Image 1 (cartoon, rainbow, N blue to C red):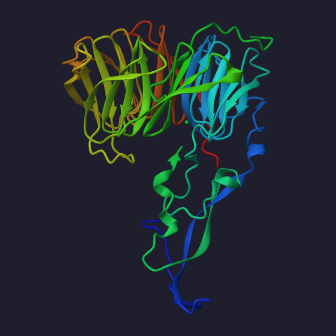
Image 2 (cartoon, rainbow, N blue to C red; image 1 turned 90 degrees about the vertical axis):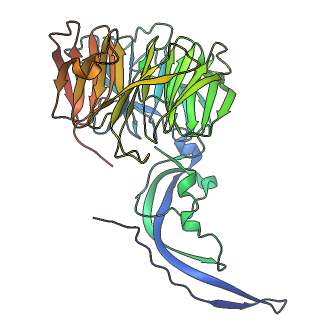
Image 3 (cartoon, rainbow, N blue to C red; image 1 turned 90 degrees about the horizontal axis):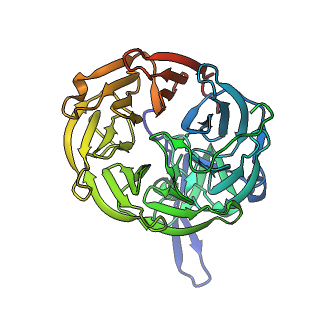
Amino acid sequence: MKTSIRLSLTALVLTAFLSSCSDKTVERITYEANVPVYLSFNEFRTSFAKSDPVEISRPGKIYFKDNYLFVNEVGKGIHVIDNSDPANPIKKAFYEIMGNVDMAISGNILFADSYIDLVAIDISDIENPVEAGRIENIFPEVVPEGDRWYPYAMVDKSKGVIVDWDVKTVTEEREPGSTWNGYLYRGEMMFMTAADGAAKLSAGAGTAGSMARFMLNDHYLYLIAHPWMMKTVDVAEAEDMSIVDSINVSRNMETLFLLGEKLFVGTTTGMLIYDVTDATRPGLISHYDHINACDPVVADENYAYVTLRTGTTCSNGQNLLEVIDISSITSPYLVKSYPMYNPHGLGIDGDLLFVCDGTAGLKIYDKSDPLDIINRKIAHYPGFFTYDVIPMDGTLMLVGEEGIYQYDYSDPQNIVELSQIPITGDEK
């Protein structure tokens, strides 16, 4: 197992006699680094395709719309599943979208990130999707993650889209005391989850899980374009999408959740609440601060629920479920914290709270008393890793490390597992 960055430095003093007779001293440095693999812009931007259903190997974000469940295959595309019968979900297609992690659907248009671009796909016919529009370079810093034990080097984004990394030996020359290019890029990059085929898609948006970085509000799409930047995109016309607003914040944004005219933003240092009465220009109302942690957030009219966890790049030292009083939206405050094992995504429906507690499995609570949630556990499904959930109308859709699970919770005292779509394992 690698435990440190492998690095070999060979410093060689070279003396170059310049025409002005002055000397220039440089160091030659040799080291191992992640070197980018490029795909031409033209090939990248003509790569969208639909294929027959494929095995799910590395699931990420989930999204539900009009009896269809959309499951991200991290970095590769989106699985389309007919979920009209949750006890018998049927995989219908796979949309090949390079570098895809997030999605949102309005009417019959699917919006998806594809490395550095935002793509709009017409899915009026699920079996025959068509790319309808694209905003180029809206996520300029997004690249796939390389081997974390090595630095990044020789990056030139003008050569094309970075789609992979190769670990190679790199030799550079520099003046003594100057910045070593091998580390130049690590902090700047955002690493990156009907019978005839005609979908009966209604107007309006679908429902995302709590890990979403995309959120629709009428015909505007809010998206986290960079950890420090949220953009508002007018998506009324898929063929002519445009950026209408950008917000810079001094925090690392991670997730978005919309409740009425309030947008909740989960960040590594707390929760931000925006007024989106004017959908084009979110205005900050208030914030709630917590320890440094990765956190998704969901909310009802009176409380917001946040999970914090260890084992992430956020360097958090605690695993918690926090309940925050938002009845006074300008002054949110912590009501109570509950210990968890390693919580990830969460969801709410009425008085029910669903928590994906990592390898501790799925936990379901009665949240009617925010001061006593931990003692009101309704059910616990241990023994498998859980990532995110969408509860809707008595059916819970859950994505985990070993499969896509669905439960009937219409009777909370008699929750029944309906189905499981297995996962085959990670593929590069």
